[in-house]
Image (tube, rainbow, N blue to C red; front, side, top):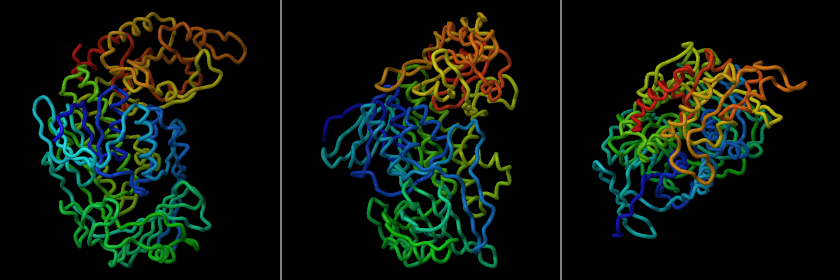
Length: 580
């Protein structure tokens, strides 16, 4: 056995969630090791939906452009029941939301995250298995087995299990994984369809029996490429799993359950053939379709389960290791990515000694309620459709886009300030448009201003750029570097980022066509931007000069009057258990 090698964080599982956790730590200069049992990325279009909230997070990282260029937009869904077209669902969001719904094969998502992580100096250690681990007050000792180096003992400050529904980390912790399995198996395929249906729309066609139950189903989600779709449908009995499929699927019994009792994931005695998929399309598709170029197919079982805790001590789980559920609404991968982002910045603060270990308990407190809600909602929607939640269309779309996730009742929420229905501590920090800088001739979004800032950001909203309160607030923020990032990294800025947003109309225009206030903005002690159309004020609803702390995961950490900047910072540092 090799000698013990140390690292700050050991991450098991290099899917989208593990890669996101690694990236979220690497940008803060945290030493990580990322291991995965597979020899390479699986070429399967499993999770394909990318939610607007995930794109916002990737934008903050500086990854959104690559994703947008590789993905295709999802405009809505065409629904048919017993051959009758139902009202079309349009995936429309308010104009202040910067991104729409997108589709991208999981292996492409993994490729982009892997390339981003490589730019930060971290590579995946492939064909490496976690055999066992133990933890004590000072760290975690893990035993790894790799194809190239044999067994190796690793000493890590923390361990994160992103190793899927059959997680070895979850089992090693002894966490419960309560829930159940759906009795039905599904066929999945990545295929091209030659049909006359509008591009950019998913298709759901079902047949309902006399008692209202669905006895035949077809779901097609567009993918990049002409006429390309990821299709799913009920599997005929002869395809129900009996032994493992190729490509790393867990061994299954005749009911599709793996040895650990979790009936979730790929598997099957034989994979569906093109004729199997074509037969369902012939029965249910709303227009004649000829299928071809099937890149991949499999049988899939679905369970709904959630752990009792998202971690214990120095060991945590995220993504499918913590929660599994139906793929309705493309919630699973996106929820897991946000698990990882929530945990990563907290671990980074603790590891650099800027926060006490109590901060890490907020991971379970904030994310487990989200997991419970997602599991419950996707189970309802799988059985009854989105109409199972009779919200107005705007609320429904925002929830599906994961833009309504909030932690107002969580342990990190600070004192609210301003209108109750305005963005408050724990809420998502919304984007806005129409920001002008002294040296630019175009308008920017708030996301543009915060891009490349992996740590905390503070926004100072000023009604008068020459008010001394701005200079005092900026000076007081100089003492709050503890909530910045740990160290410079190749692609990211260092430290706490502070910017000012200035109300328009604060001084005469310098020249025709020049927004009022830009010359005063240039004199501010921090980078300043003019709220030319009042969009920031409309969305954030500040009451006079107001400060906002934006957490690394894009949620608001605090909202306060600038006259109380020092007190507000002290309160926020206290909830983080920051050691000044």
